[in-house]
Image (cartoon, rainbow, N blue to C red; front, side, top):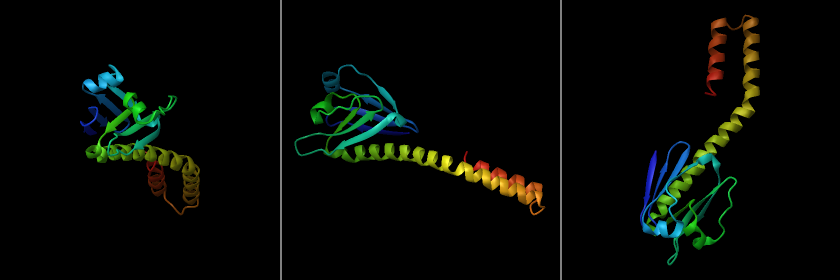
Length: 158
């Protein structure tokens, strides 16, 4: 679990664990801009996009989480200030925002690549087990060797 604290523009704590990101707005500015929205927990796999806007000299930066099935806020900085799925940050907090973006992308990529590996390799694992069974039937492998190799192949996906 990682926790990030944003204090410059609108105060917000952001907590990330294996599958969820929690946005915890704090302070009067959040109430004025977003109302009494309270804490929000989002399943990271429901995030379809992460929009990053670098802070400028006179403008705030933001990290907008676009959720599957929701309408994306296209109002730039002014819209981001009111969006409950957006983390606002200043120059000093830009590194934290980039870390959050990288963590979300890494978690999503791991799941995506795991899903691709398991769907592509399931057939080849089954084929491999068939080949091992044939070697056992021919007396090239013992039953114990076959069982161990089969367990190794199947255990790879756990």
